[in-house]
Amino acid sequence: MILRIGCHIENTQTNRYTRILPLSTWSKEKILTPDRLVLMVRAKGVVLIPLLLLPATPGFYMLTLGERGQWIYFLKNTYPSAKVYHKQRSPKPIFTTNSWTNITINWSDDIIDVFCNETIVFHYVHRQPLIFYFFSLAVDPGSWATWSANCIPSDIDGPPLDGGWSEWGPWACSASCNGGIGTRKRYCNSPEPNVRGEPCLGPSSMTGRCNTILCGDITDGIFELSEY
Image 1 (cartoon, rainbow, N blue to C red):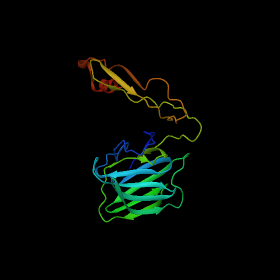
Image 2 (cartoon, rainbow, N blue to C red; image 1 turned 45 degrees about the horizontal axis):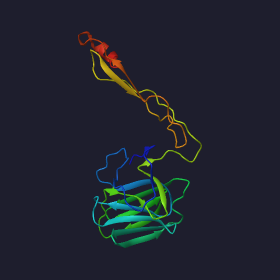
Image 3 (cartoon, rainbow, N blue to C red; image 1 turned 90 degrees about the horizontal axis):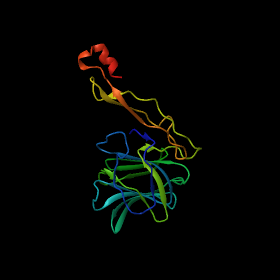
Image 4 (cartoon, rainbow, N blue to C red; image 1 turned 45 degrees about the vertical axis):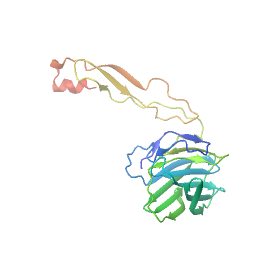
């Protein structure tokens, strides 16, 4: 899975599943059969991660991370009751409040694993196949989580980092001759600003007239030049 840099960051302080998201959310890849969820998390308390086959399906599997600091539970929620299939204690606290923790959840057939900063902290073999396409994230009352999915958050631990523009990209013209409107773009990623830094100043795109040569006057050599 390709992780995207500088993607969307959520802050969750509710025990309600207010958003049901595809497991491929914010990923640059198109994933037909999801087999993992990669999260970057800062949290205090207990984080709840429902894993669903379809939205609004009655009864769903769920991982709870951070019970009593270091416990991970895998259960099925059939409100108002829940059945715990397996629980396992992590060798150290799962989350911190001031640095990112990489939580990777993998599943295949009837096996589900949880990795914390690339160290396996949970393993369970279920009695039925595990197939998921959606997830959500909530927290216990009094808990909170700042998180992103399938991406690497911008650094917010260090000093302010102001944004810088990339080079301008190539022109794209609406016509090959007789004049058209051209656009080109640049991106605020050299570097990308962190949370404390200033964004790039100025426009991210430029427009202008392009390929003004008459169509009847174009030769192969002129056409190549007029594309830029």
